[in-house]
Length: 62
Image (cartoon, rainbow, N blue to C red; front, side, top):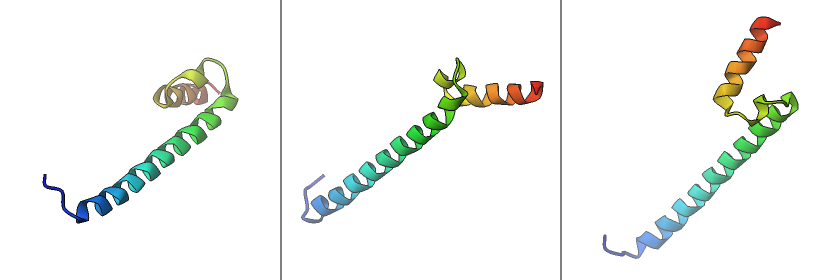
């Protein structure tokens, strides 16, 4: 790839976009983990997929 004057500007926009999506991902992960924490116990440490399974099982036995 040859460096053209337009490249730095495009790169700056892409970096901002990447930074924004990374921030959104971190925020989503933080809110998800804070939602899981009140349930406590062994469930809170598991991956969201397992948490969903455990919650479904808990609803079945209610």
